Length: 421
Image 1 (spheres, one colour):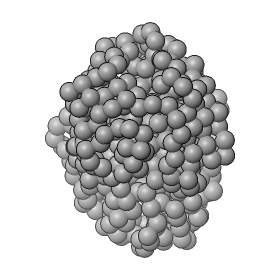
Image 2 (cartoon, one colour):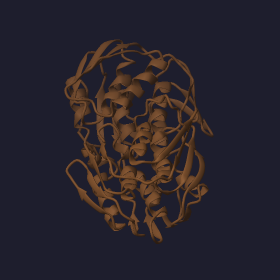
Image 3 (spheres, helix red, strand yellow):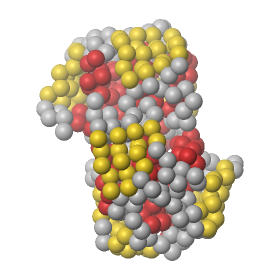
């Protein structure tokens, strides 16, 4: 799939797609409940499908009607099944400890794309210390054993998803548990999203400065849920408004726990004109200037922030983003490579990027099989001088399959060549 994009200002209104982060958590909590649950407004991306399929492998009966998903709980004591996580790191990091909490015997966890290259040492070490057998620290791996309540220690600066996975698992094990953090927690907001979702399902969790205490029980209490709009995906459209248009995104909860809602404050720092009313955010073009971004809590925003910086006067420095090197791609490297292809002066550091604003020129680039790279550089292409193309755009199916539909509805001149599926 290849997108050929002719420069054109983006204007209008779109609705944010359902949050991928919230969807994962709602589906898993539903499957760990004591009764059937309906999850409303659940997106249909490849990552959502991966989570649904792994829950089905663990015995959950799940049906979908449009954006509504009906979930009957998982069974316990699973054996000889495969959890195919596709390319979803969230699915893998959540479901490995969850499978062990349900009781695992010869459960094989697999993945595709770059996922088998990504390390799982942190969660494997913790599970092994608590009686679980893990065949490897990378996928594919086989796990066996029954996770028990107790004390768990792990770093907070590797991936918050390991902590979220343990919180989900320990909430359905009889007995009290404690998770101790041995380093500062990054992406804390996403851990709080997990805790908030678990609390909606009746879990009792105490939050300390460097620990979490969980009162376990046999199952969560069933609770129908509605998935909120996705701030991570909305960021691409909001940034497009800041660079050169006038865009409103509806369906964005102003009281969200999603860390990427920080996009509003960051665009305001760049100089964009922003108006907020109820659950709508409107961003209008204004003269932009370089800023300094600490990405430790918002790593997923880095590609679109880098693109925004390319249109800003002066220099933007993005720091504390080293975790991006083990995402779907090495996002620091791949973002820098594409900025240069569009004629932007960028320096890659160990943990970030230094970007000098300018006027991007049209370019032909690839996706690096990374959904956020595709969406960020579609925005860049819309405001560059000359036609651009992005090859491998099917990567958007991972999180936002309808991205180009929304992009076109805002006036984007985009010809998508090839099968999107």
